[in-house]
Image (tube, rainbow, N blue to C red; front, side, top):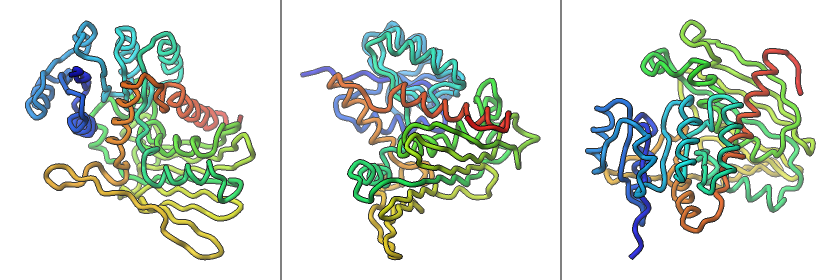
Amino acid sequence: MQEPIGAAIVGCGAIFPLHAGAVQQLDGVKLKVVVDSDASKAEQAAAEYACEAANDYQTLLERDDIQVVHLCTPHHLHAEMATRLLRAGKHVLTEKPLAHHLKAAEDLLAEARRNEAQLGVVFQNRYNASSQKIREFLDSKTLGRLLCLKGIVTWHRDEAYYTDSPWRGRWATEGGGVLINQAIHTLDLLQWFGGDVVSVQGSVTADALGDVIEVEDTAHASFRFADGVRGLFYATNAYLANSPVELELVFEGGTLHQRGDCLYLIQDGLESLISEPPVSLDDAGRIIGKSYWGSSHRLLIADFYDHIRTGTRFAINGEEGLKTLRLIAELYRSSRTRDSR
């Protein structure tokens, strides 16, 4: 009987349970170690998931029983940790972003290309039912040519969100604000649907939290894609609710509109529901994942392990993670210089 794949998770914060729960449900995978620099967090997580606790991820480097490591750590730690783990032959699945700035991401990608171990990035919203359906329409060209698309993110983050985790809201550790943390998923979808971005123009501001954070809480942008498609984007953490992300794609033969996590097709003035998300429940019957995040972590994680088993390349790899960081870097540059490129 084949030995299960040994897994470890570094970082026992807010996103940790989604990774730990997904790993525990996978056949042929065993969560062996959880790591956090806060010993009490690591021990509590280890007790809950019946595994070992550790305080330093470097203890994983020499362990032959650990093949896959999940990074659920603050942004500025992703690149250094992933680089060392890849060099040690570990497959790495990192939460977004790939790194907290573009140069670190480019260096990490160069390292990944030198190693056989896989590097995956968690853009789970690509696995949402609505995203998959949109991708089908794009690939099949059923609605004709894509003309334009937009994404809107209106969420809420208060002062405590930043003061409770001081790495957030700082250029040196978070690498940005709403763009690189919350709205990065929507930017990823826009470039996944729209294709290569050739021009970015926009601006970033701190509309509500300027006295709390160094970075932006609000951003807007206009994109031009390689085949003439136009894109619009707006994101803020200055709303007073966490609303579902809105997406719209206008084709020659109809419009796709995602709202409330459901996808609608509008043709000839008539609107029809064509996709709605399945409800994922844990063992206690509670909904898994916040609806405005998307609930597809489990699908992405299962797919990553399937690629590990088969030795095929995972689609959302370092190259894909770098695309979205480049888009963010261009938006910051445009905001500083007031021009497009």
